[in-house]
Image (tube, rainbow, N blue to C red; front, side, top):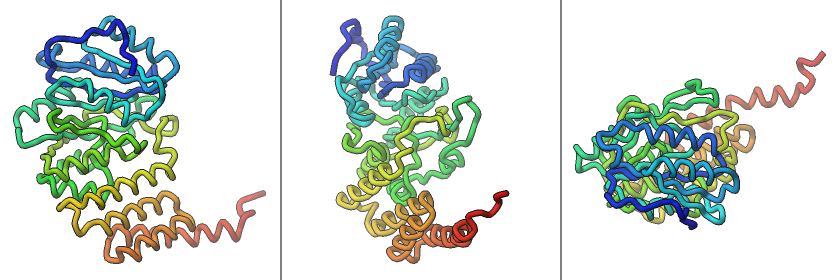
Length: 325
């Protein structure tokens, strides 16, 4: 990892270390950094912003160099080869000196009150190690699409780590990565061999250790979504492979909170994939899920939904010229 020569090491220990990986999004990066520099904190000097450029090969280093020249809270590094977001974040975690670690993505915007509210919760509740918050999904024009996830926005996250683990293990990740803050003493790190699902595994492993989690119900991050948004989740086949790998690693770890859930977790993953693929591929996945967990309501609903689509599929196949002049 290359350290820019003009980045000085600050001497005072910060309260919050913001960790960010960036790759070929210089314009979005400018917006993300502007939002972080404008955080409403009693002592702005208690913040450090750590950015790792994941071998962008464009004007990203120039953007970071300009920011570091005028913003002493920013430190940044460039990687010589692309390693992925998880590994890049871990490089920043290696450099973090704050009591709390906050994750930020290079194309999302943290609202001004985000860091202060999350740190205040950790200050007030020593039994909590991890703080989450909903995000507000917006399109490229800034138009609001939705608030995610509903379980946080409605204030319905369970109180115990075991109960939260069960929700996330069965239903997928409900704690958005760019709105997380945790205690640095936990030593949390991302699995570097996963390109997607790395945040899901990180959270599940913390919960499996009994780390307390709390969530604010107010959206604290504007997260860009939509057809123009670059995302690894576009490659669904690869994303699904990584998600299955997350479940396999939890099964191998077999924490007490997961016992008795492995079959259902695998079946629900297959059902989620089935809803995405639809068609005959989706139906096969849904049947596999139903055979493994016939008593699971989510799996049954996915199968019934797909079966209900078959007549429409057959109609299009049998009447290819329908609607033509």
